[in-house]
Amino acid sequence: MACLGENAPPLTAVLGDIEREVTAKNIPMANMSLIERRDYTINCNWKVYIDNYLEGYHIPIAHPGLFREIDYDQYRVETFPTYSRQHAPMRPASDVEALDRDRRFLRTEAEEEALYYWVFPNFMLNFYPDNLQINIILPLGHDSTLTIFEWYFEQPGTGGGWESMQNSIAFSDQVQQEDIEICETVQKGLQSRSYDVGRFSVQRENGVHHFHSLLYHTLSQSIPRR
Ligand SMILES: [Fe+2]
Image (tube, rainbow, N blue to C red; front, side):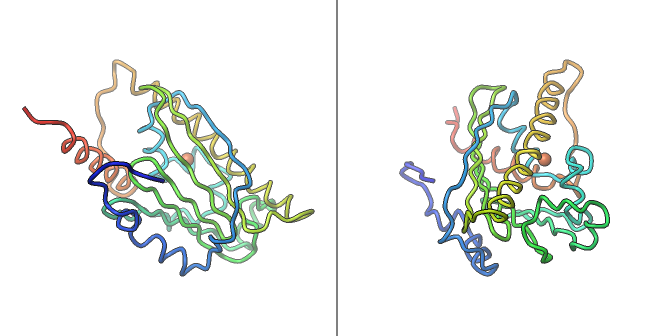
């Protein structure tokens, strides 16, 4: 990630406490390597995709598999000057196994918390107990967006380890396909002549409000006033 602007703030200032929090979780970042990249082109505005990422409102409906894995009541978004952090605690294995023995989301049996960071405007870091998935969101047009997913693992492994890693990637791909469907549906809704504006949910969409506040602030500063 690089910014070539003359007045760009230092990267460490933009990333705030992310490095410290990841280090505290003992996530082996330094030993991870790129295992897979997948590109997805989506028929929606790039902001629709970011909006969707920043709220958990749609999880019970759009992501039944993910919904089974996380403690949805504990799901929340915290906002910071240049990024936001989502808390999505995973349910204990015993709870999930009662519902579904196929734990594709997790490669460990321990109760863990995934760390999801969105860095303004278009970069996501998704930390899991043994892997990191990054997303880069690039506008291709007003209604078309390229989303780049990369998966980093510490130990690619063989046999069961390899299969488990592929299951993690496949699960992320499944969630992404579900997000593509909902984002393309939202884009159609935004283009409807009957749609005007709506209010944000204070409880579920504070991250989306934060994104649009940063966007408004940034664009207000970059557009010359007459
Ligand atoms: Fe989603």
